[in-house]
Length: 301
Ligand SMILES: Nc1ncnc2c1ncn2[C@@H]1O[C@H](COP(=O)(O)OP(=O)(O)O)[C@@H](O)[C@H]1O
Ligand SMILES: [Mg+2]
Image (cartoon, rainbow, N blue to C red; front, side, top):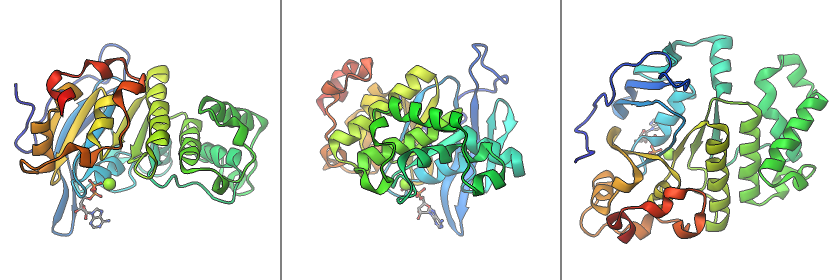
């Protein structure tokens, strides 16, 4: 069975607001972004119908970041629709749009913390959308906010760093602070754009384990742009491959064979997967039971 699509294809038919199991459905319908004459995302259609952990892979420039940024309206789409619970996300304005942006928290490659602020305040900044502007300006947080932030840090295993300035932490710790900040938004989903691209393998594993744990324990959708195939295979329930703005693959990680990867990356026979590896050892992850259930073909590459 081929998972390849020649250009834009609506993979799943229309659905009701909920999928019958109480999960919210997000639908992408021919979502397109052009920058001048360049089409960064080209009529991409797919649905997420349950709280999956979705990995988006593809070579640099394939459109991964643009796709993610359109979801939370950091980048305006040129055409198409994104629906959540049947609601048109791309036409939201003002307070409704800010509310939506709080509902889909972003995690970035470069963490985007305020370096000189202490860790716990950085985490509480995730609550800003929930406060009035004046209150935010004067940096007034309630005891409840402080407790929630400490709880989020504790969950990420870094509560002991709460009073340090963010810039004093290692990259891996900073990314965990950023994830704690995302949790403070109490979002419907977490959108992570290359969250481990700046980290060493050990910290990459800690951060990916944390995202997987949030997905599993909180039942949240996590969409994660990843530049390494092994990470996508190890952590994600579903992998979407992009090439030149098109969605060219949508399937289970087990279906992501070397031949398929070669197509996604537009590489020839010399394609070497190791070049995309973060060296996270799938066998040691323990975070995803099915990580060990890769097909022999996938495991052998
Ligand atoms: N703000 C922008 N202005 C112009 N072109 C852009 C902008 N952002 C992205 N692009 C272009 O869109 C394409 C997709 O970029 P991007 O989404 O960043 O890809 P990826 O995240 O897969 O590396 C690239 O050709 C890139 O140069
Ligand atoms: Mg990118």
